[in-house]
Image 1 (cartoon, rainbow, N blue to C red):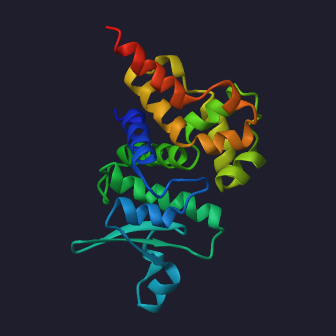
Image 2 (image 1 turned 60 degrees about the vertical axis):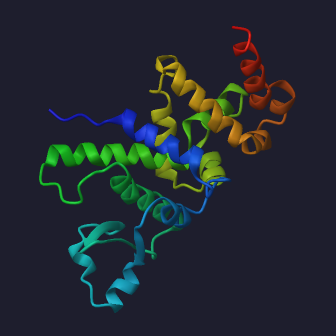
Length: 218
């Protein structure tokens, strides 16, 4: 029986959040991120039709990643709302980044891949570390707020709030928690924008410096 590999998808998304030069704000430019992190080419459905490509063979009205020879092309429907496209593009990119085969005949395994890439896309668009920190400072996480702050659809925002309650921070390893701290530090300006008293109460940069000093005691 196949089960979704949430841990790997989450770790891969976190790796991008730390390393990417494109994600310096939220919402961030998804197409630029895909160009930065892969060799995938992007093409709209409209351009595909002009080139004589049968878009109805894709099997999706939103986006589909296809391999032509040694090239990977991500076709997407630019007639759909931008919030929808941002998620769809990251979902398809997630299949490639997580090493999923583009052709999967095992329906059960395919469903696992779909769940994994949804988890991956949601973590990139709305990092759990930032959402948890906002909650810690009493900022209410609502669908309208997530839509405005992260540029996502109503459905994606509602699903993220629902899934956030299933994540247990205490189950994480020390290494994972340190990785979370790096993400919080990198996006401190975003958090300070909504938590006005945050910078006065706590600074992750200062805490990291204090921890390094404590480590030198031993």
